[in-house]
Length: 186
Image (cartoon, rainbow, N blue to C red; front, side):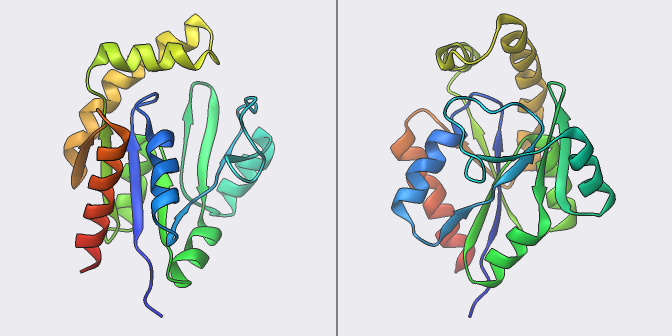
């Protein structure tokens, strides 16, 4: 069995990574989304073990000490990380595994796994990005301001990614990513 492709899939908060990912999962049965661990509280739409594994900060730090993550970072006062073993298991089963992570984590994975495919999702504009963040209705003004400030910093990382995909239309962006994946596998 041929090993799957590891895809580092990132962009700034609110750019629509999750929306595009839902479309990718609908269109390709061989794509699996890595489930990350986080210490942030669940949102109404979250499902344990599907959107995230929700853990305490103490448990998260224990996993760091055990080298249990491909990457991890602290963002907006919470920790996020990609557990190593489940990803490697899926790759060995032949699945293409997407790591939907933030930019610092993406840089960590690209250093550890230089054979990964790196894709950076960009917004049509900063104004549209802010509109999307506000449209979620899940964060207070202070958090939105933090995320917008961080988004400006995150956009600087685009140059380190092999591929850049504009999210001006979800269907078009999903098709572009599937095309990238196909060409990387050939």
